[in-house]
Structure formats: structure tokens, C-alpha cells
Length: 370
Image (cartoon, rainbow, N blue to C red; front, side, top):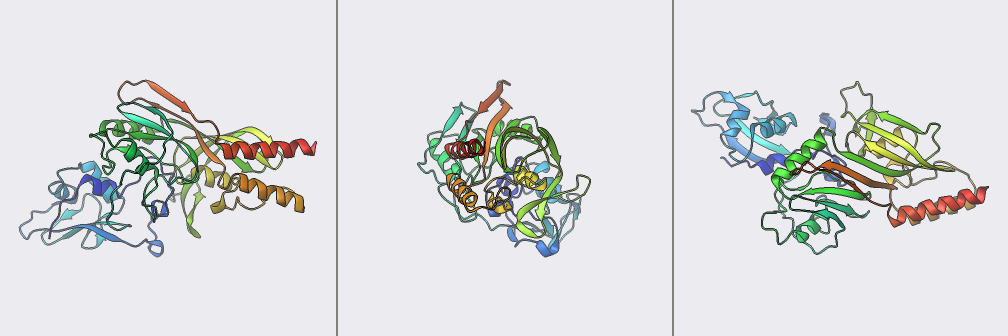
């Protein structure tokens, strides 16, 4: 039994350069612990012929994968997606006659397509190579985990429906990075494979410029600082990420620089600059240093973390949660080098209405305290 493994198959096993995923399926990156292994789904299988010469598995797959590269195959092997006789192998494994080679992923084969949907988009910039979009809070970025319509990707497919060179189901074009469902702000979309390759390299090498605004619980002693710590799956809660020592082999290295913008009694408005883009990076780094994002339900920010115990204060916080019913996080700036012209591009998104209303309410609270 044999099949042709396309580049899209391999790409679906690998994360995008920025790992701020919003879907549970996207978040579930296995850390290798057998007890936490996700369900597995076979996407491709081939049995080596009896006359097959002994050869490295990456070269073996190259012979059956005309649409991809050895680098992609090696990355899939590093991710544990390539199995021989049901066991994960490295790319230097030597295939022998009769070996059963499979591609195994943690989600079933996609039996749906990205369908264009007429959904309003706030396009900040667009040319023949790329788009910059200002995403509202509450919009899922990519289909998955029960969200197969109404996503940003569906909206992009509609916006570019007349572009014959743009296929929304082609992983070589489209979103360059992602942000969480309930995070607002700027996202970058590549309209050509060449543009996506160039832009993804910038994210990989951390040469992009990204700043976020966040309202967090508590008051900082210092005006600025840096949080360094590997980010990986929380072993006690698979829906959360956690911080591990930088010199450990657990998780992936992450660096967040922060600066105080405005102190508002029991909360603080900060600016965060990312060197890396890990899953929930700002949210988990801030929680790690005792400053959980305001109204971040997943990390406990939707409770009264700082402040008074009075009924009036509880009512005030409840009203604040209603004004901004999500984690108070906004992807405010995005800078990168244009893939064709080399021009330095820089975009800024104003704070959305819900965060502006939240800040205004806290400012009135502070004034009333004087």
C-alpha cells in the first residue's frame, strides 16, 4: 500500500513561526511524555518493497515526495511524526525491505476545506505580496477544534476570492503567524509562496518588531524588565502553558521585555516586546512574575487578584469584566522587511474600544481615590 505525501501533509504537522495559537487543537503540542500523549491519526503509509535497498528514511521519502524538500522531511522526523514499524525514527534511520513507514499526526485528516465567507475585514495595508489585518477580539484565526467557519482565514479567502494565484487551502500562502482568539491586533498574511518564505524567516530569526499592550493585575516596583524562561505545556493542566528554567530541556526558550505605561491602583498598563513568539507567551510570562493579565480566564485573571474586599470594589471589578470580557491584550505594533522591496514596514493599531473603556473606568476609580 502506498500513497504520495505532499508538502501540505508535512506542513500540517509543524507549527508556524509564531505559536500564539487560539485553538485547543493547535495548543496541544505533545511534550513527549507517554502519559500525556495525544490521540494519534495516521495520515500516510507505505510498505518498503522486498527489493528495496537500505537507505536513509529521509532519502526514501524524498523518492515518494516530489512536492517537498528533505528539510521538511527532517523537521517532520524531529517532531516525531515519521514512524517506522510504529516507532518514531530520526531522519538518519535506514529503511530496510518490508519496513512500514507512516506519517502520524495528533489530529485526523482534514475532511473540510477553507470556504470563502463574506466576513468584514479591517485591512490596514495590502499589496500584491502581503496583507496586514487588524483582527478584533473574539474572532478565531484559523479553522479547527469545532471552529470550521467564521474564522479570519475564511474572511481572507473571501477577500482574495478573485485572486487566481491565492489558494486558501495551500499552506505555502496565508497567515504568517497567529494570535489568540481573544487577543486583538495586527496579523500578517502572505499572498505568494515567496513572500511567506521570506516573512517566516524573519519571524524565525526574531527580526520582526512586535509590541503588545496588556493590562495586568498588580503594581510593578520597577518601570521595566525582562522575563526569560522556557515555555511548555503545564503538566498539571494541559490547557495551560507554564514557565520552566531557561537552562532546562523542558519547553522552548522565550523572552519578553516589558515596560510600565500607566499605573492604575491595583492594575498596570504595560507594553510588551517579544523576542520570541511562544504559545500564550505574554500571558504565561506575566502570570509567572505575579502579574496575571486582567480578565484572563485561563490563567486566573478573571478573579479579584489585587485590591479591596468591599462589596463596592467587587461590583466595580465585575463591571470592568463586563466592559472587556476577555484577556486585556492587544497586538499593537508590527514591523518587518517587505519581502520584495526590502523596505522596512511598520504598522500601529490603536487600542480597541473595550480596552479603552476599561482603562477609562480604572482612571475614574483612581481619581475617586484621591
